Amino acid sequence: MSHQLLPVSPSAASIHQLFEGLKEHAPEQRKLSVKARVKRLDALYAEVWRRRDDLKRAMWDDFQKPPQEVDLTEIFVLKQEIKAIKKGLKTWARPQRVPGGLSLIGSSSWIRPEAKGVVLIVSPWNYPMQLLFRPLVAAIAAGCTVMLKPSEYTAHTAQVLAEIVEAVFDPREVALVQGGVETATELLQLPFNHMFFTGSPDVGKIVMAAAAKIPCSVTLELGGKSPVIIDPSANIKASAKRIAWAKLSNAGQICVAPDYILVHESKRDELVEALKQAMDALYPNADSIAQDYQRIVHPRHAERIQGLITDAKERGAQVVQGGEVDVQGCEVAPTLLVDVPVDSQILQEEIFGPVLPIVTWKEPEEAIAFIRARPTPLALYLYGKKRSLTRRFIEEISSGGVSINNSVIHVSSTDLPFGGLGSSGIGSSNGVYGFREFTHYRGMYAQRWAGFGPALMPPYTQRKSRLIDIVLRWL
Image (cartoon, rainbow, N blue to C red):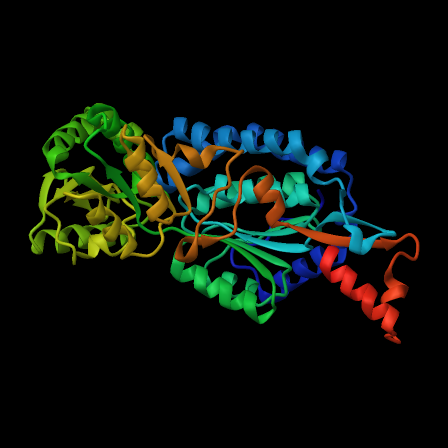
């Protein structure tokens, strides 16, 4: 492409100029064939693959993300998303005939999927490529033009992403702007047709308020405290291994990371020992910590996590594993807490770090009440073999999604909707569900012949009144 990369924190005039280009081109983008949309997705992945090593270096420089995890949680996930969309797009984009019923006899009805128009995608830093490009893939598949805003916390990665977008897309189709709060604030003042935001609930409220002024539709992928319930029938060793991996992956900086554990009191000690062993097996020595264990993205976040640990300890919680924090080095050791008071900050705020509080319960009602007293979680993790108890937890606890006898993995599925409920989000993504977020389903109606309509129009004679009575009774 002939255009140049914008500087970080571009001027308001530059942002508005980009938006106007996207808006002007949106009608042409909407008319792109399925083949043309797929061609753009293939080009995107080809460039990502070409810049694979650059992405790994950038994410290591940003927060020491292990190269293997860049492959698994960024590039592989994007590849699977593109593969799923390419497989289903022809069917999803096709107009769909729908029945009209006897009351609409003489007509035909169908649904026409159309792009919403110009969309904004704002992504966080914890998965800096996946959470920007995965919704981008859905938006391109739907036929939208797109404005992208990556996080300023992962600046090295944002620069590589900007170069990838510049190499693949015409700036009238996809534009990427870098910057902090000022850039985001400027973007939120523009009249987009849809906003897709991934991040904290507090910022999500700001995005929703901005969307309400336009107004436009929103997708909010937020977070919250995703609980784990372990019942007495669970395989503790296997459960601990899966929970430890899910909690420590990305150093706990995942919106669906297990945030706290509710374990039956009879299994607490066994679980604690199993979690210790599982954590030590994942990161057995200093070398593995240095190479395979990710850092916290910024000293401010490390200091926040340290504050949560300190508050819990001051209220009586016991650290049974880890607890060490190097704020300036952005290092937080894998940490387990027990005897955590209910009023501790760590049981009120989303942790977003490698610290796992453990709370016990005696009866299922206690675990259910504990979770229901808090905002609706993005994910609910249930470990156990007793199906009746699992079913009860599912029926009595609301959540964005549920995973049974595993954690986090469900997010990677392109066949399941991923999204929150209430404070944990609005709308869904992944596969066809992402495509639907960026698509307006336009209802189409065509009158083919007269049908019953004229017979039911004024003036209302006695004969027409009898006919209306028949319609109400039998149609």
